[in-house]
Amino acid sequence: MKFVRKHWSNILIILVIILLTIPQTRTEIQIFVNRLLASTPAKIEENNQKELTSYYWPLEDPYGRRKNLESSKNKVIFMNYWATWCPPCIAEMPDLERLYQKYQDQVDFYFVTNDDPEKVRSFMKKYEYTFPVYFSTGKKPENLSSNSLPTTYVIAKNGKIVFDKTGTANWNSDRFTSVLDHLIAE
Image 1 (tube, helix red, strand yellow):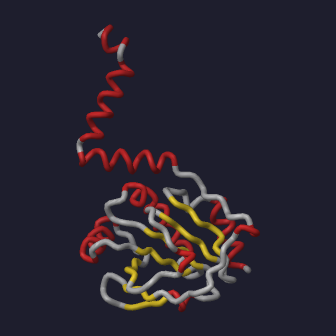
Image 2: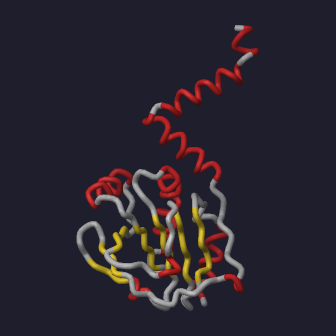
């Protein structure tokens, strides 16, 4: 027992390393750590905000229904790039679902992925997510390009990109929703 008390921190580190080498537990640990470290993203200063000049971007949902980002011009847009295999993406999904449930009638949501449609349908069903998922079927607007997951953009009615966040974030915080409420009211 003295050995355990004396070396408990080393034993804990070894246990975590072992758990991280097992694929089934590694993902769950990564998701937990990402949720733990997620913070509310910062709004881009007004003079640094880029503007979305073209809204043309053809998209398709997992069932083959087509939509174009142009239908969201002059509306508040919440755009999230994600994947079913991405632990940071999975970590923020519960908050994003709650945000969607709260604002689905006031904000146009786009959850864009390159995953296999069947895999996406299974993922959505497994976690009971209802937010709208799309696949790109054409070139995306230049100011909405990212090679990292997750990446989230929030676009004001005037086309200004107000949030440009790469990595896990707490999108359902009071601080973020108060900014979102302000964008909706503009």
